[in-house]
Picture 1 (cartoon, rainbow, N blue to C red):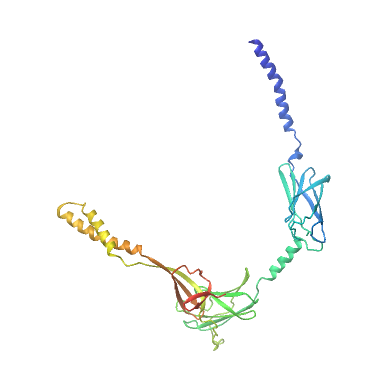
Picture 2 (picture 1 turned 45 degrees about the horizontal axis):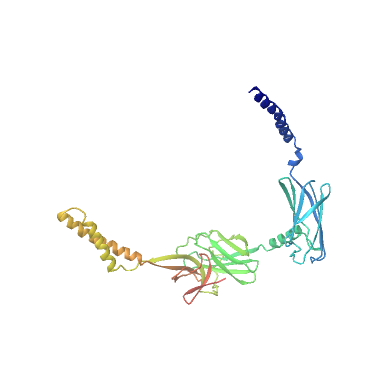
Amino acid sequence: MNLHKNIFFGLFALFVPLIFASGVAHAQQPASSFTAPRIGGFDVEQVRELTAGAELNFTLYGTPGGIATIRIPGAVERLLLEEMETGLYEASYTIKSRDRIAPDSQVTANLRLGNQVASMVLDESLLAGAASHSDAKRTADAAALAMVPRIDRFDVEPNRLVSGSDLIFTLYGTPGGKASIRIAGVKGRVFLEETRDGVYEGVYTIKSRDRIAPDSKVTANLRLGDRDSSAILDKSLLATSATHPSSRRWARNCANCGVIEAINVIEVKGEGSYLGMIAGGLAGALLGNQVGGGSGKKVATVAGAAGGAYAGNEIAKRMKVTKHYEVIVRLESGGSQAVSYEAEPGFRVGERVKVENGALVRNQ
């Protein structure tokens, strides 16, 4: 027994130093293995043509001791760079006939160190003489900025603010856009038509329900593509002795054009059927017969039959409910028109339409 104990303690004494030594060695690993990689530069020797056989020479500067790779969109292979000197990685890629590499391909470099990766996108074009990605972006941004619509002037011919009077609006700005206005106290928008290049005109006929004041806020909006500009009218809507209402009448080029103001779903109940009344009456009589006794039972039976017949008739009506859609169009001429559809019409509120032969067509 003592022999066994001596052997056990001897083995224990032998392995304990090894266990602690292993732990100490792990704790003393160099801190550099946990350093995040960094890419200081990424470059390419541009080529005259991106054809098969042309060589793309890449250079990357970054943290030494890493694994550097390059991904070229359109290339069939990923490129592995070799660390030629400390922190200097180089590699060449020969374009294959099956590659589909474009001058503006977004080439990405990755530098891996341990389980961390740094990435950088090549700014230069692969093709000699082509603009860099940053230059191309600045050019695109400038072009987009130039496309922002411009409102030079927004005007109105004042009038009496009573039902039936016309307010004629004119907007001057960038041509080719879509112009509309909103008047405080008026429901919905009023669209303006481009009658000449950069000149948008429209009329609003005041309704009895409108609540327009001389200083009501009127906002014009001019949209071009996905960009728009706004302007606020800076004059009164009310004609004074100094500003007589214009005798000019608005030439409405499209009396049956307008904007969808609402889409209503109309449910129509069908007629009840004798079958429903009979089935409901029988069910009601059966239930009434289970209540009370004697004359009370007869009364309950009769009442149940009557109630059941009514319920059965209502159920039959509900089973025959039909739906149709009513599209309300606010016309540019000042009125409104309802157009019915048996199925969903496929339009949306605010869309410009034209009424033709009792149906609606889009009016862009």
